[in-house]
Length: 399
Image (cartoon, rainbow, N blue to C red):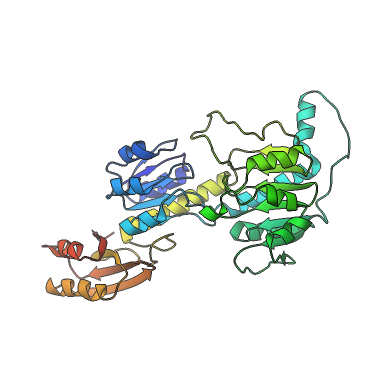
């Protein structure tokens, strides 16, 4: 079994996969299209971060690929519909870099409030400008959090500990932590927030949702922080709001178009503006976060490849499978009535006993994991594959 890890995934992933008997190839950059398909020849498991796009075309061209691990939070770079239809398991790291992103947000809020990047630039140029103009404490200021998930809610707690008042808006009902106040709509949040921090996902409806209308609705001289998705904010409208003095500053970590590799040239219309912090998509880029992400996602890939476990899969039904005993058959199929009966009829026709069996379904996909007392094949797998409802089937050897 072989894994290909792209985009400088942490060494902890390599160690875990290697320790579990999986051959690992690593590459520093992202791959797409035909280059990605060529690199996947003979590869069972793919590890990516945010810049490699696993499209429907790539999935169709690589039917041997069994799982993709997104070593990050987002999975919008993967066609999840095509992955589910082909039985390709997808895993991510929804919690591992939460604290790192929160700490960057807090750091950037402090820097914006005190104009630290502007002060540093003047000092580097040899200018001593000691002034309190435009500098403020965070205590008593209002932070508006758009998207109250894992990151937004933890940011809420840390900001309150610094003495900030916190309001939030989310399209889903969420429990307010501490003294945070839930806003009825986005405009209510924007009208009262000194700092607005965006923490929404990459769904298509969020593309460009924060633009001129939202900047106009923001409190005068407020600040914007975007550490979630580059496609969320209209940068032309943001520049206009900054240069007009409508906003006092911004911190941007993600961009609509990002270089493929570290060291590549970068250009943005936001470069050169006062009190604007630009960082190269490093929200989760701490040693602690990357090591934890590497270990977590690699573990999910190995558990699926070796045991058939789909716990915390983004797209497949969740089955908590442990180490393989004598023999295990895993069967992904269309979620329609009668499939399990057909599968067990085939097992019976081969005179094998079912020692344990787990079935789970998720939307259009069903997943059954069966432990048998023995396995001699003699056409068993071929019969399972021949079922019209079958998406993917394989046998797993004992650990």
